[in-house]
Amino acid sequence: MTGMSRTWIWIAVGIAIGLVISLGLVYAIMPYYYNYYYGNYPGALPIGPSASNYYGGYTYGTYSISQIIKEVMEVPSYAHVYPNNNTIVFTSKDINLLVVAMMGDDAERMFNATPPSYVHGDVFVIYGLINPTLVMPAGAVVHVTFVNLDDDMYHNFVITTVTPPHTHIM
Image 1 (cartoon, rainbow, N blue to C red):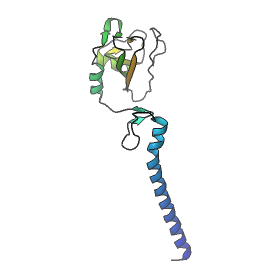
Image 2: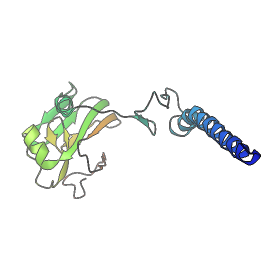
Image 3: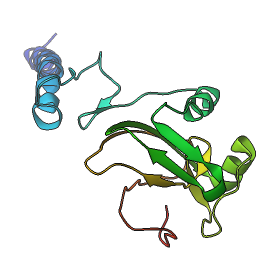
Image 4: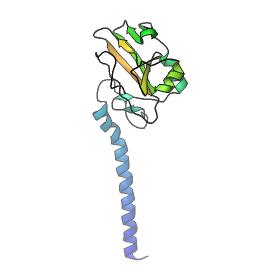
């Protein structure tokens, strides 16, 4: 083996060792970096390989459709559902709300519900109602769990004081 070929072998070994050390450092530092930018507050969850369901300060998960349908129909004692006028009235100032976004046709079939006349396309389902009006006490704290059943569409969810019909839904 010539001196020139041994030099290239040592260069390749040095590069490989450098890459391994660099990747190890990145893997060790990334959880702290993400926690600093996305979750640096009391009670923040750790970020890294063991906390893969965490993004931007929020946790997320995967659930079966049947589980979501069951849970979205579980009405808490402080919520009163009025299908006749598509309204949900809350009596608590601490509200946990499960909102499911999905295709309107699927929601009609799955929940045997009729959307308001101004609704077209994608919808939100809350306690079996499609795009209901939510009435909450002033100053209520609302904790929203948002489930998107559309695999090809992003949605937004806004709580507003504007009364229906809402012309810019979804």
